[in-house]
Length: 79
Ligand SMILES: [Zn+2]
Image 1 (cartoon, rainbow, N blue to C red):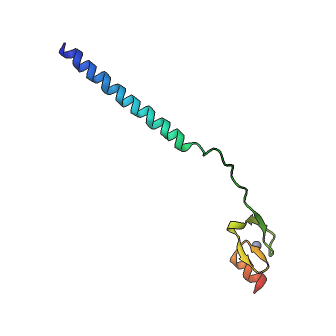
Image 2 (image 1 turned 180 degrees about the vertical axis):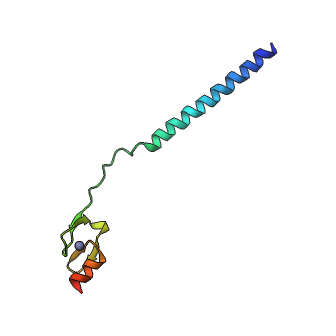
Image 3 (image 1 turned 60 degrees about the horizontal axis):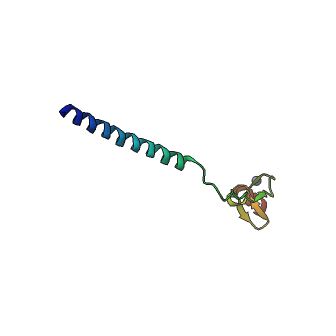
């Protein structure tokens, strides 16, 4: 009877451990999955007036004559 109790405790502990592991894995998969719903907004592309390189406006250097790929090209173009 004593061994049966020990066995029951071990089985219960194993089930708790297994459930925790399954819950952790499900949460990890949920976090790894990309968020659904709103699709990614395409970035506005601009061309550098100096060299013609296209790049996202958020990464461009704003200048008087447009958006530049780098501060160096802005200086070359605008002085
Ligand atoms: Zn450029």
